[in-house]
Image 1 (tube, rainbow, N blue to C red):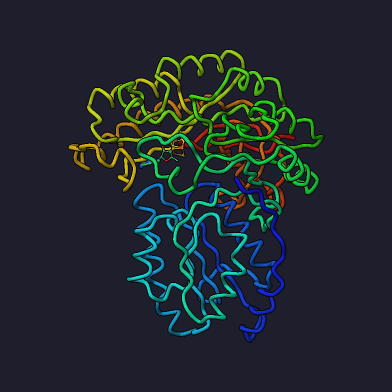
Image 2 (tube, helix red, strand yellow):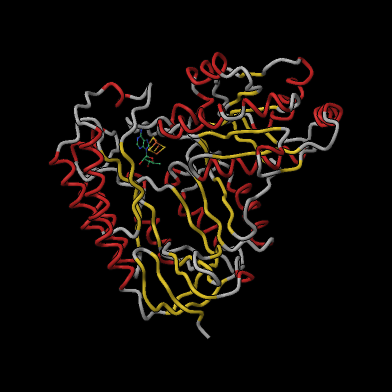
Length: 460
Ligand code: 5AD
Ligand code: SF4
């Protein structure tokens, strides 16, 4: 693994300044997971470092970058649609540069498609290219021809990238990159490369800075945070990293994602129970409730082991809540397999489920499996899953009435004069309050609920 430190590229900044007649604006849009959103924030930071301003309208932009996701086919199609819509803009503004980066650009067939069918795309680079973006832009200008990188695995950790965070009170903090798990349906290990952890000192320094800057919620990111620390010179585990971070004084809370059940330890659960800064909510994707499918998915746990962990957490962490990812319609999923998933979600009682219909990803082992179930059948299963989930979640939400809770106010509410605050357990409450409260803590008395949304009033 390469360890790199970002440095300002003065030559590229000067070349860009000479190219544009007026100070240029960049539009950056990220798709997919939080890791990608955080990469997008770094892309914006790097672009600002070489003289770009930022805008949120493609029509004002001199540079348009789509930071893409490859997890499901639907997301890829959306990107091609959005890129296609830019052709006209390019005709109006010859200095406009258009780029596609991120996970899609790590796949050879995608780069080839962009090369052949989207000639107005100037720049294509993968997930390891952010620190080199200024150099790529400068080269695009200097040579006057497209810069399309062949997907390569650099497996680097780049520290000290400039960053322009989207929020002033909630921050993403990657602690590791890549994935070594090779779940059979998943493209991530192929596009994001091998698992590699950041040094605890680098994480701690960034964490401290965030707390000093007044960030109230910090979410640690990794494809499998529970295997954090492997391969470091002085290996430490994820629970100890949490303990280290929790020593930083301040008024903040920590969340983390994603936890792979096969590596979630009892020590981690004990740590969540012991540390006040840690939210009592665990995102623990199970994917399926069928042992047969879990094996086919290469998940390395079975339902009994998963339930043991859930029971242990419920016992040790009063009021703990869970969320999960579920895949519906994995190749060969039978009615019996699916029924087992429904049983499991009833037994756990998840506050939230992120549900996905299986999407075939070229190059993954599952793509070769026979998949006789029709899309209509899969969609019908999805409906049943959502209904089962709602039964629990709506009742659990309604049962919170009467409590007073502390929330982090995160956005304006849907109704005039209201704001939304997020509870420790990840539920959202809408209540009357001025928007000036966004980004602050508030104590809220819960009065009722509408479906999965709590309603309440500001406590005195
Ligand atoms: N099809 C559907 N869902 C997928 N996920 C990952 N790969 C696929 C796929 N090929 C889901 C998993 C994972 C979440 C981030 O995306 O549930 O946990
Ligand atoms: Fe994909 Fe599995 Fe890695 Fe998650 S743990 S990123 S689902 S391979």
